[in-house]
Image (tube, rainbow over all chains, first blue to last red; front, side, top):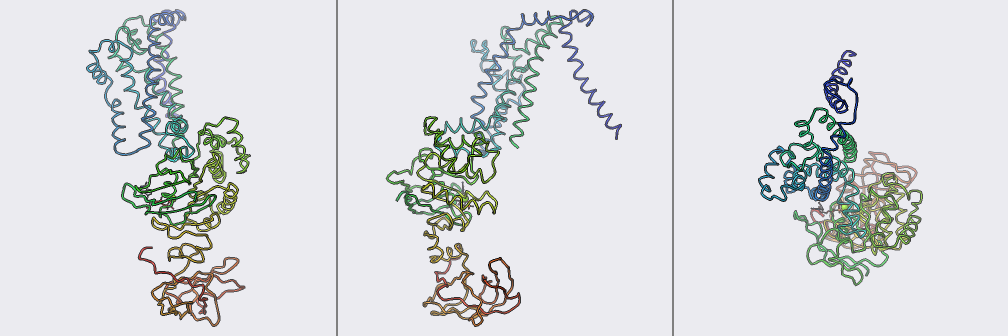
Length: 261
Length: 344
Ligand SMILES: Nc1ncnc2c1ncn2[C@@H]1O[C@H](COP(=O)(O)OP(=O)(O)OP(=O)(O)O)[C@@H](O)[C@H]1O
Ligand SMILES: [Mg+2]
């Protein structure tokens, strides 16, 4: 029994090391003066400064797209989830499947479809809005599902009827009753959307232009064309941005799940 | 009349005729109870009055001179207490009670004053700042009542407001609710399937059966003079005296009883409290079970009628199961009604 436990622990540690060692190595490389001489060459923040100089626009573009994506998925996703939760039936199941379609299609295919459809509209094709459309298509189902599962767990109809008898019209009911009670789902959905949007590569790689590189696209670019230390420093910056988001996302979805039980 | 209902019927999309054309008039300040078995259409009628359900074409709902038939819920100024209370979990007790006043667009100070007043009236002071999830069932029930009453509705509707509580609490809260409604002085309609609740709270009770109002009247009138067999059975648990009526004689398996008047073609009913043990009574029966209920014994008897007959016996002792006893039923306590139709 004890041996079994020890073995289990060893395997877990090994797996963790398998994942962590390359990460740590890469992060370390980003603050090492010369990677080929190793840590002995000294630590520096110089590479991070270089990355900032070269790729700051990518960071801001990614943040901008993520926030815009969040706004759009909130405005479309929350009412959509509400409508689906209010009228469960065959039609709403079909709508739900349709919204979730981009999850099943590879990002590349989705990007190709967008290019075919809008590629000839040069102004749109060259603007960040083009990437935004891709991100919205990709992240919307996460927002809808997250909100919907929280709404499905409360007796929405009766709560709304209660508000209606107290004089609240449809709009007031939505903002006073539906939204506050869906908040845990909205929060979990929002964090998922922002995290996915910032980290999205497949689709964005196909849609981007030389002047519009998002964070992960910039990362690939730096790996391909810069010295290893710079690429590693980039990875470091990427981690610093995405890890807190991931942690917050996990916390929020656990909370939303508790609420919907 | 304050509230006038004409020709209210409801057919659900699936084809269920939940309510057959119904008329009802309710006076200012009156408390009316809709009483009936499960599925008879009580909730449907209440929800139509609230505006949460639309009646079939041809219906008319008037509040004084105001035709509200086609008014949406939020403009009807009707307070509703839901079976599940439907309190907003995202608001405190105060927030819930003040919500209706906020919807009326009253200034903050006025809302606060009214909320304080209602909280005091419903004795909710200790819980005013609490979250809804931190309240017991009985407390939630009072918050739901306070919330519905705070915006001064012209009519208060309650759908089985006590049914979510356990039996012991229900009895206590029933009297409390009756007292509060009187104190409010508000016109109220109250749905229940518990006759004690209806009797304790209402000025008038409308007994419903299969989508129609079978009889409406004061609790005493319903109890003393039920007009149909259904009402007799439902209010006060009358038992059928199954036998043959010839003139003013009722022939039963256990003997013959005298009636007050010739009643050929009718059906006879009696209540357990009107069946007496009497040494020289005209009916013979065998005791099958005896239950001691503190103030009295409940005796089950067979052989007197076609079904089991119950007798409530007040005394120091009761006969034992298996003994043969004689019974008497006074002619004036026998209810003579039209026979029940097949499924009524
Ligand atoms: N939304 C609906 N769709 C279809 N049929 C319904 C609907 N609501 C109620 N019914 C049917 O209408 C009839 C009356 O229902 P209603 O809810 O008014 O009964 P009730 O007297 O309130 O019963 P209970 O005491 O069980 O609450 C029932 O046969 C019920 O099945
Ligand atoms: Mg009901």
